Amino acid sequence: PSEPRPPACGARIPAMQPAGAALLALSSNRGAAYDVVLLGHVLAAVVGFGAVAVAGIYALLLRRPGPPSVSVLRYYRPGVNWAGRITFLVPVLGVALVGMSHGSWSYNDHWVIGGLALWAAAALAGEMVVWPAERGLQRLVSEDSPDTASRRSLGWQVAASSGVLMVVFVVALVIMVAKP
Image: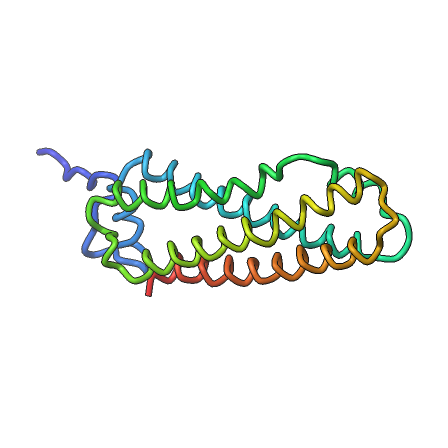
């Protein structure tokens, strides 16, 4: 006599349905590729928005009276904030996730549209406020400008807009996890 075979990985076991088992089964049925893209989506959001948060913190440090620290000077050396631009991968990977979800998620889901709208607002704020002000700070720091009024003003723009974007990030995170 043969023994009963255990269910396939990710299959639902009716007698054993702890909290979250259905979600685990759903995630497992999507495959490893979905999980890799999901990980990339989450990492892009954390790295991109984390870079924006760091820019805000350094902008506050740059507003202090007196000469800036070596780390602040190093941070504001001229160049593109590529870590912040990683946020542009977030919707690309999110669209891929919707496509890979086997119909579990769609553009009819309010949380998907809400997430895209929040990302669009954050990208617009980044392109129109954060990164131009950051470039201004880079210029002032690289020229060793004594213009502390401009440094304080641009520092405030970066810090305040970075703080707003952190709120947007947290709201988007809650929406993505809760999927209301």
